[in-house]
Image (cartoon, rainbow over all chains, first blue to last red):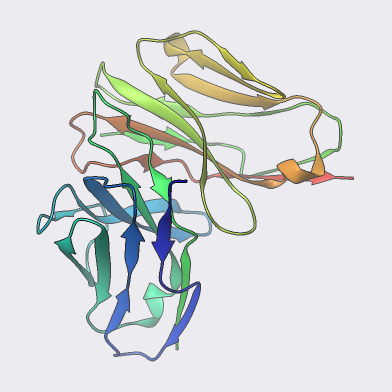
Length: 115
Length: 116
């Protein structure tokens, strides 16, 4: 059974803290993604990675960075958390893109609150 | 640039009614994929369907059906005889070959409420 696992369902952090959100997939997928979900805004792409040590900015990368040292793990980093980063964060993975299977599989989400 | 519009923010119907969720997309690419995802209260997005731009056949899966019309750039989703378990947020999404960032462009979602 395919699986994308996010390390925390709920997280509360203080302003200015460095925050790590972890995501692991067991499907040997090349592509991994971090999205942010906010009411009325839907899902917005923060960063994605198509290979180990490779990363690309999405639509809203400001204030975030990512790390992909191993194929199965994709970490989202908030260098200095701010209250406007309070949100639901969703990780996803997918096989090689266009021309092959393209559906993405999602984790259960991490609801981050920055106080 | 890619764009997906789900004009219905929230829909509320009584159980057993049919309901259609609208999705309109914009892209200049000729090759693209359209998706529907369901997000129940548990939070995880669940894949429902993928349709590529060369396949305009409608699809039916049990109580679910999808109508893809390239002429109107729409990919609507209909639930027949709705049930309370269908209550969720539904997202339409678009994947193109070269539209800037890879990954899916999502609509803002439609919150579907099925009342018993």
